Length: 228
Image (cartoon, rainbow, N blue to C red):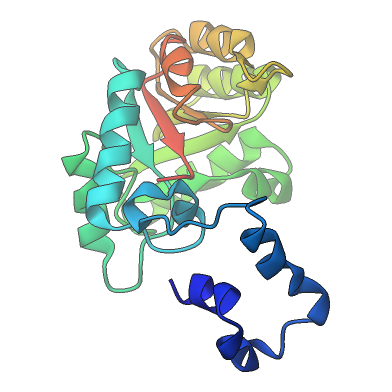
């Protein structure tokens, strides 16, 4: 509301003297009716989800819509939680019909692309995790990120030949956006068919409210979104 007052009332312009003079034409544009300036309530403004902490009710509302569209796959959150409000944020996900990816860095091992690069390949990365968990006597879920069908096959080959703690395979960016706004899920579906239920699967990348329904039809166990 303050921005609207500043633009409409010249008395207040002394308070915005730091704004370059070339932007003051906005007042004239508004008076001529070329542009309409309105106040958008925070709960109706999806852009806020990219710039600030999302209120619990808004988050659960978005989750419910995505969860219904993704069924039978489950929606997971991957967005960073607000400091000191982790349990509240995680709770909002559950209210909306989603599932928690993990509570923190302590209850699941995530083997990401940078770990794979440093280890010299996906096989070496998983082997290092298996060795560490065995040495420390730890038992927890392990997820590995794959970016190509070749990496998926390499993970499966390792699992056949070794006793592994691996529980889930992330299929990252295997949903390919198309110029018309649709998505191609053929690579994702092929990866799911290769895995054939031996591990949980998680689709990640290019997940939106508009694409999640189609992604869910690929047969993945989970769909994760950075918007949540």
